[in-house]
Image 1 (tube, rainbow, N blue to C red):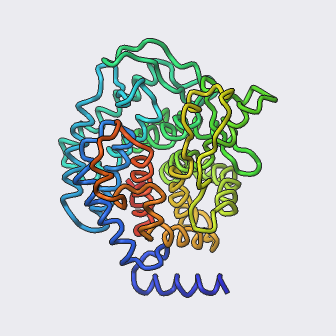
Image 2: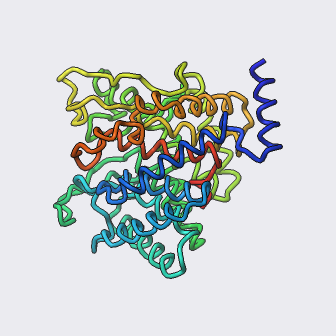
Image 3: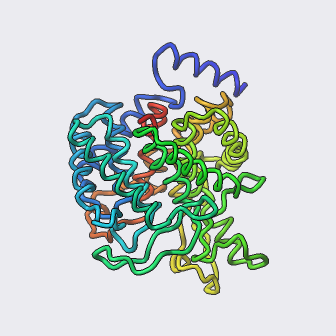
Length: 401
């Protein structure tokens, strides 16, 4: 019966021109519009580059879906400001500390999204900035012997590099490999960029467990696959960031699949990522979200610096939607994927659920007026989920650059 109901919904969506992933596309569009209005008014000067990048990508998608030029104008202005922050060494500061390649790739996703909407002069500047970054990555040997990308650098506030993080890192490998490098390949057709991207993505794919869990490999933060028999290391590696990894790693994986142009690589990628899809489908919460409703607390013995506060993995889980829409549209028309996205759509368009999830546009105005640090967990939830809501309405809107 569920399959039949989905087929009926799909047929109705095709006839109406609406996305099959939303239950009531008018409701989902209203959700996106109210979110974009909130971002355009309140988040245009977000100092943390990775959060700002997702906020601006939501606005670009909002422009494409809703046709409101205000959203694009805010994002274009922010993109200009982002390029102005590039340091002489080719990197960007995160806005809250050291130089992290993963954060940089998150932020530059904004530029990838803006490129097709920008005037020619801006597009020249976009390309030059990303080329400088990739040249810096090559120069400073951040492409590791394993094929993975490194974490980045400890640095002074002015960008002066103090030392290299000597780590293979899951998130930077997926995002720089799957987005930044493959974008450079698409622009230049230089094979080295595509090969570096594949080497990084292939390294990530090789770490995925049989049950579809993606490890958060970052040895410097006590998440080291070489360490055996340490419960705290195992927790950091396999438990703490399960859905965060689905979001960030999935973003890079789907981007690489869409833009690499190599059928053999695509076939291997899809085969190795299939367990992740199964993991996402079987672990969705009854309410339509993913992840624990309460952050997991660990003992003081956990040496990871992230153990100073509980980490809300659930609030970074919405990228599961982007992964499932890609899988359904480009890999396999699995009705379970369609049903899962529609279930999340039903969840997140309920204002009470959205507020509980951390969506800032659903918080009371007084709470939003309270002075905040550089970014909050709610900022991250709101920025990432905007990308998911947009994808429900127009699948691939963020990744079809």
